[in-house]
Figure 1 (cartoon, helix red, strand yellow):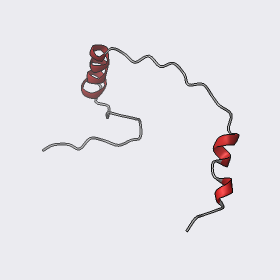
Figure 2: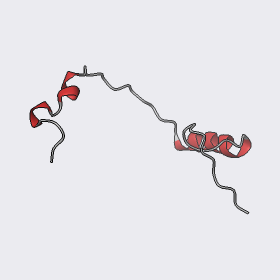
Figure 3: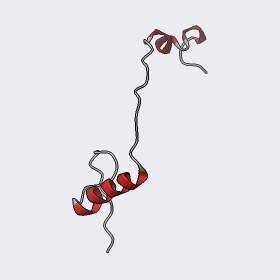
Figure 4: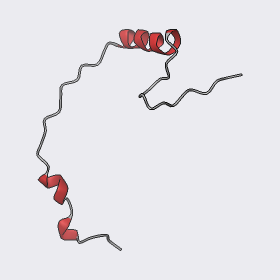
Length: 59
């Protein structure tokens, strides 16, 4: 069972304009680890994206 006709497959993707990807330079691991430590332990912020999820507390 298909949803929609097969002739329309990929219609939206073909219509969207091609955008070149941005050049992304990642930090060196040592600097990245230092920054993560500062955020997670010194400032007490949750890791990852800012979605509001908290790490579980151990008892």
